[in-house]
Length: 321
Image (tube, rainbow, N blue to C red; front, side, top):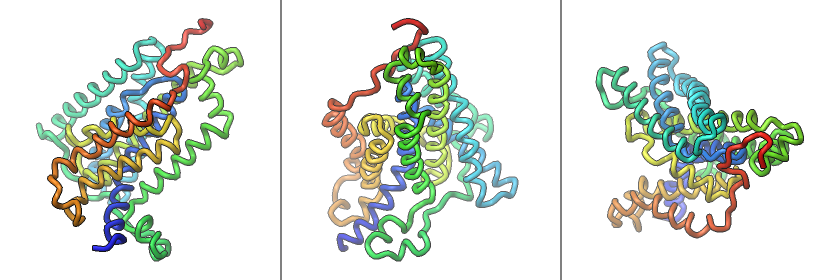
């Protein structure tokens, strides 16, 4: 097997695995840039994955066919945003410990979705498999480009391109627009921002809602492109990998994109390892733990140089320094 053939296996798989991480990490960036720590990314992905599976099945029953998973993504965005407001209420309005609130969101999401799955599907521990998923495809014309085409435009889902585009959009919004300036100001020095007439509470609520929207989208994308059904172990750590990607990326959307691709590459090794000559002899358990080991090594090596926004995790009390 040539090097090119190996890359044609690994890279599309890495991009597919990275897509939910990119989307969810972008949500984390928006929340923490406003000064709200969001440990609840896992819970937001769980809610999105549940909504993605249930509504895809429902839309299929309505006869919407291939449009079903795409419509479910829209519902997941709304559901994720709504669910994240619980974290906003606890951490912004009631000024609860943001880490504790995020952990509670994770537990609540898992318990709630397991309960609802059992109620909706006659005691089953998981949803039925969806009939219509968002499949890998070849991009017309572009996939014929030598070298680049087979690697980046073949066997790729359109949601992967959407994730990359959104990463660039979020970067532009944060660093090049008045909204982004206000968002960063409430995360760095909320008192100064308030003095200048910026509504700190409102900005933080907007950021948390956007975080939920991206997290819900990430979870739903995972279900309709990779898992194809939802159960209690479907997401299982993906939200924490997204959180690690956000930190590894230094709270920058493009940095989070690169980190998510790195973690996606690590995950792809556990999926494609049996097809690659020099990896197929490695015990499968080592390939399965590779993403998490690389995550630890990456964070241990780079996070020490990354500083979060100065007011990240600090509740804002109007008028208090």
